[in-house]
Image 1: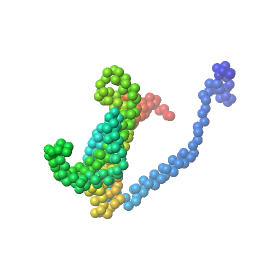
Image 2: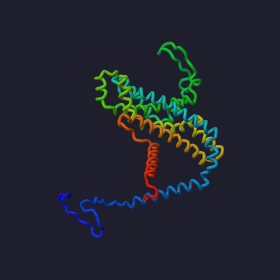
Image 3: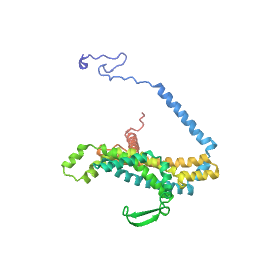
Image 4: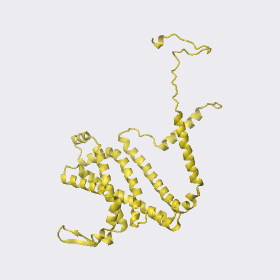
Length: 326
């Protein structure tokens, strides 16, 4: 029967009640008791862990506070950031060239790029670092000139490739192999039809690459690229085998003298967490920038959400009549 033709049925005991036909439907709330039990158990475990952090003397927070901003630790942190910056810049620059070579129509470039990626992904990073650190055992002098002909100038390898330079070369070459595949996957994610349409409009190939391919490919490249940068930042600790005074090496030196292993490890851990968090925030805003091509109105940032919530609360307070209760 049509609801508009149903007779009004008053609810007994309530004067002026609406008819059953006009009453809104009632949806029974689903109960999830185990969800609350699991949540309570997790909160209890977190509370116990936090209590242990505060009360357990083994953490030795005074020693942590003493060395967290020590000059030696900050200098080592600077070295870590420099290794990350140079490894990322050179690695992604070479990775872009390798990705373009793998996507080219030249079979020689494709094979060379594939062999490079295969080789440097197969060899452990520590082996690559130690190889470049000891390159002078193979080549005492290097020369630049005509292949199989006269040299224009030569130089001593030990005088040019220091420990820091060897670490940068090893990190960059290792990073290039992984970043090449990330960038290639981003390029492949762009629909070929868009390039065909751009070519039909007469756009030059460089403009097609810069204005069509890159903005769309970046949405696929950025998440994985940021993971690689963060992995490289933490992976710089492996150069401690080359006695380079980066963050982890300096922490090892300090706790080797003082014997305070746990608080010094926490110094390195907290610095890694802080800088990784900064990289994650930067990733969020860069991804939001490149999402403009897919969303007319980008979603609000966390800060914008907080501001909007404050404005909503203020507006609701101003609109409520004086003395009214909710």
